Length: 232
Figure (cartoon, helix red, strand yellow):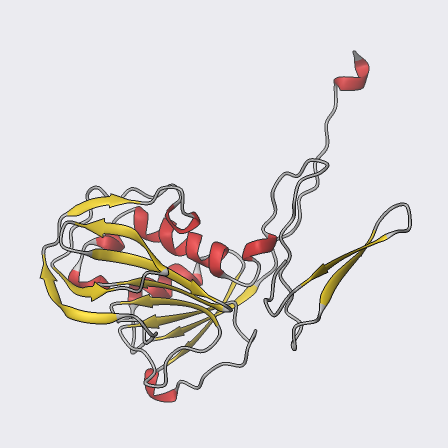
């Protein structure tokens, strides 16, 4: 039939987001983030770091350093450093940890294969019960994710320079996934929708408003409360 000889789709343009990298210098992270589509990269040395205002950056990446005052609200990605968050403790070191498994269903781990990853040395962490191990070795977690309220943290327990990860395909995949899933546009990522599908919405308005009000085609209004969170 002529009526089914054409199709259409709406493709939303992915908004640019600001990413802050706090590092003394990391060639692998800088090169990767500079080529990541939709990312506006800002770099600062640890000695010059100041806690960002809420919503100032979609994602803050800490390379082998973390602020003494802990992490404020926002989205944080850590490499080679224990998250300064209540419940995380260092139990020593692991040498040549053997990869056991990873959570393939998690958005940060999507399409990544860690079976051939080699790590010379990693920190051994004791993690709080509200965290999730994303990459597990026989000796302990290598990548963890933790969310509480408006704080979202993903952390890698080893220094990139103590591994061959930067030379593995899973590294750029993981970082790209983190930018997309943890960044400010993470909940608004474009995808195919059908009538009746639920849509997650995150607001950048501060202070967070009481509710999201949607005007329906028939003139009625649908009201969804934020309840102190920044998404509904």
